[in-house]
Amino acid sequence: MQRTVHDYLKALEAGDADKAASLFIPDGWVESPFLGRLPVRQFIKKVAESSKGTKLTVHDVLVSAEGHLRAVAYYLYDWRLKDGSRVAFDCADVFNFDPSSGRIQSIVLVYDTHPVRGVVESKYP
Image (cartoon, rainbow, N blue to C red; front, side, top):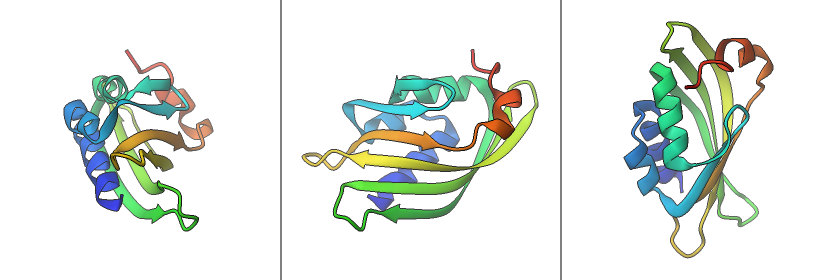
């Protein structure tokens, strides 16, 4: 699970929707405070279309101690948008894995939107 989480974060940082989607089950999705629930490929494309550059600094990847197929990635999202504005914030993504394939089923993004809302909210195409 940890390797898959790191691979996903690299794909997100690169804006590589194909690589990200290859880590998911076919109907996998991502839920974001700004974009809602989207199929993974659509989510990555929307983020990439609004970005001029992204740098992710992983603080930790935690795997469930309760036996669930779940991991949490805690990282700093340093995001430069197409208009040149920049925002950095800590994020915790909750990854749920499919028991039969071991691939990502879903990711729920958790972060405080208050400090970033004014910079980011209107930037998605």
